[in-house]
Amino acid sequence: MNNENPPSVIVSGIHFDLTPSLKTFVQQKAWRLFRHGERVIRIRVELEHEKRHGLSWFVAKGHVSSHGWDLNASVDTDECHKSILLLVGKLDRMLRQRAIFRKESRNHPHGVELAAALPKAC
Image 1 (cartoon, rainbow, N blue to C red):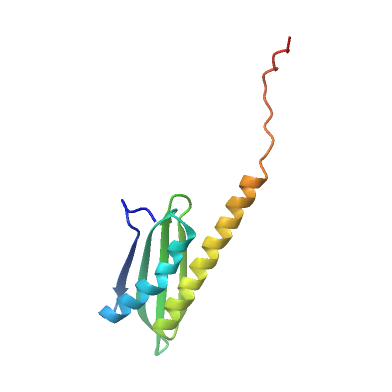
Image 2 (cartoon, rainbow, N blue to C red):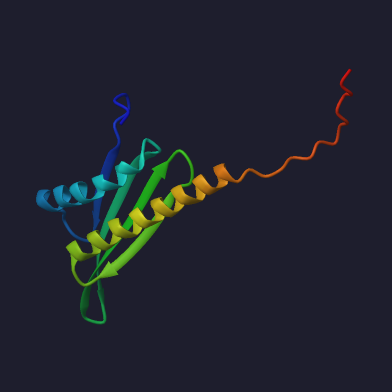
């Protein structure tokens, strides 16, 4: 990792208070997303508590900022820790798919046609 700008995990809660242990849990689980290289700059996780039809739902939203495309994902379940684990897994798969796409693009360059005529060799 680059020591000049260390990556960060930002955790925020909507409609409920985050405990220090929950913040630590999110940071530990989200840290595995930084293994995809130095391209990941920041990960922001928003945890939201909703009441739907008399039931409690926890929505975990993740935003990955990188030197390319930014990724967004959302997962909602009836348990907070389960939402966090599913969100991290989803973002991990998205980062892996993006890496495969970039690698395929690099290995299969497209031909370039020039409008100008090439000079004749002597």
